[in-house]
Each structure stands twice: as C-alpha cells, then as structure tokens.
Amino acid sequence: MWRSHELRPSYDVVIIGAGAHGLAAAYYLGQQHGIKNVALLDKNYLGAGASGRNTAILRSNYRTPEGIPFYDASLKLYECLSEELEWNLMFSKRGHLTLAHSDSSVTGLRVRAENNQLLGVDSRIIYPEEIRALAPAMDLSPAAHYPVLAALYHPPGGIIRHDAVVWGYARACDRMGIQIHPFTEVTGIAVENRKVSGVQTARGFIQAGAVVNATAGWATTISRMAGVPLPIVTHPLQACVTEPLKPFLDPVIVSATLHVYLSQTDKGELVIGAEIDPYQSYSMKGTLPTLEQMATYTLELFPQLHGVRVLRQWAGVCDMTPDFAPIMGAASQVANFYMDVGWGTYGFKASPIAGKCMAELIATGRVPPLIEPFSPARFQNGRLVGEKAAAAVSH
Ligand code: PYC
Image 1 (cartoon, rainbow, N blue to C red):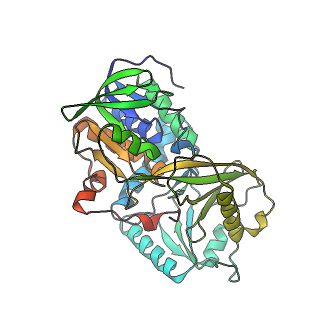
Image 2 (cartoon, rainbow, N blue to C red):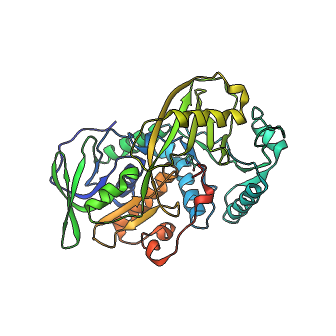
Image 3 (tube, rainbow, N blue to C red):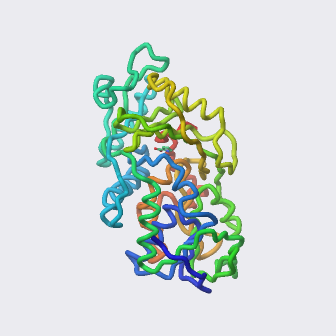
C-alpha cells in the first residue's frame, strides 16, 4: 500500500498529520500541481487519529452560505473518489435525517433546508408519515418522551468506510513518490527570520519549504511550536459500535436534542456517536457515563434495541473553534506555515475539499475562494462563520 523510507534531508512540503486531511493535501499537491517532494509525518499509525475514529458520516446540509458550498464540494469529490483512487471506499448514499423534537427545532431546520436549496443542496423538511417510510423501525409515536415532529431530509448524505479513505489516499500518494512516515513524531518547528525552515522529528531534523499543520485535536500543540497561537480547545468525542444486526435502518439518523446519531453499516453493526465530552482533554478512551447516554438516547428512538450488545467504544479528539468553523490558510505570524485545523466534529466530511484547497494555496500562493471565509484573520476582523446550528453533535 505504501512504502517505508529513510527521511530525506529536505522536502518542498512537510505535512504534519497523516490523517485524511494531510493525505488529501499531499495527494492534490502531487496530482494537481506536480509537487511530489512531500513528506507526511505522523506520530502514530495512519488513521490513528480522527480519521479512523469518526462515525464516517458524509453530508453537506450545513447552515451558512460559507459552509454549504464548501461541504457540497467535498461531497462531490467523495462521490468520485473510489473511481479516482481505484479503491472501493464503500460510499453508501442512504440519506440523512436530522430530527426535530420541538417547534423551535422545526423552525431551525426549515431555515437550513431553505439555505441548502438556495445553494443547490438537496435538503427538505419532511413529516412523520414520510419519515416512517424511510425509517420504519424508529419510534414515531406521539407518546414518545421526545416525539419526532419533523426531520431535515438530505438524500445525498450517507456513510463511507473511513479507513479506506485513508488507505486509498495513502496508496495514491505513495504511487506518486510522496513519502509517508508513520511513527515519526514532530518535536519542534524551526523558525528563522519569521519563516518556518524545518521540522525536528524523533528521527532527525528535516528542512522544509512549507509546513502544514493537519493534526486535528493536536493542532494547538503543533502550532505553538511555530509560535502561532490558535483559538482552539480540544475535546474528546465518543462513539461506539454494536454487534451486527439484520439490516433494519437505512438512513443516517441524527438527533441533537437527544445528543445522539447513528447509522447501520453494511455489515449490520450500529455505529452510534455522542455529544462532545463537556471537558477539555486529549483522552481517546470511552467512559461509562457516555456509553450509558448513547444507549439511553438510542433506546428513546429504537426501544426494540434493548439487549443489543456493544462491541467497542472509543473517543477521538476534536479541535473546537469558537464559531464551529475551520481555520484554513497561511499563518500571519510566520511565513511558510499553513493551517488546516479547527475542524471540531466536522473534519472527516471535509477531507477531500480541504486537501484540494490547501494544495492550491500552497502551490499557487492564492487563497481558493471556497476557503477565504475560513481564514485565521476572521478572529481579528470579527467575521465569524456561525456553523454551530448545523452540528449533528450537540455541544
Ligand atoms: O456533523 O454529521 C456530523 C457529525 C457526526 C458526528 C460528528 N459530527
């Protein structure tokens, strides 16, 4: 899939973080811009971070005029990615339902549906009769604790095999001669005359023409090494998977009110996710209270699942920004240092378009219009992108 290498003394671009974002940036640097003297460094195995820990949901039903076209472009890249990478990523476009349990949620989802439609994204409000047709196993009775009043239906949403995304990009990078270095921790970033010039790793020093921070939950620890502060805090996000069941659930189901979202994999397991942990931490372990919450809230929607066994539980760490939108662009404090961070709970869905835009920025020096709104400068000029209301995860 990809080869091991000695570190070269110097690379045109060093990408820290070999998850889906870092790999996608490397892939598009090579594929679109012919820049192949690129190293991807990761302190762990490929996909050990958020790329292998998310609940593999793809969607573009965001809320803001900045977020909607960006995630839509990502979904469109995902649609063609199996063919492009010659690797079956098992994208299963089964539709995505965000449930409303109160009148105010219905109003919020209606605004989202209208924003989506105005920007060409397929989303609409549906009511219990149509919800029942899409998810007949869900409890839609008016007597439920939190009756389902309506849902935002987003047919192009679905799930994908997240490890395959990592492996597919990694194989394609390797085929272009881009070097992937797992288990190569970055311990320092060299800055000379306000320019990043190289990276100190546990395997030695390497010079770099440009350095990209694509380290998700560890984003602040890396950017601090370059003297670049970030308005980011790291919170764990937990998920679990059950034993396989006969297929009974087609769409992805999300309830922010119940702090839960779930889907059934092609193998039959239920993948269930929680809200972010309410404290900052780098822990990637599951906790019993959150497991109890995930089970309780899932049973509110699917009471028939009592007795189903949970096979595994885990956490990933999320880089949360104040406005729930990412930070993408060049640092203003030091030259040659680029950030693809602040993804919070949305990062995996954005991997292809984030990588493509970062590659364009690094190769051409021009900021692609799609990522202009996510510039780090927005925290100085007050132009925040309020994407919180489009979260599947309640915060
Ligand atoms: O935004 O769809 C989402 C999501 C699901 C899990 C975490 N984020």
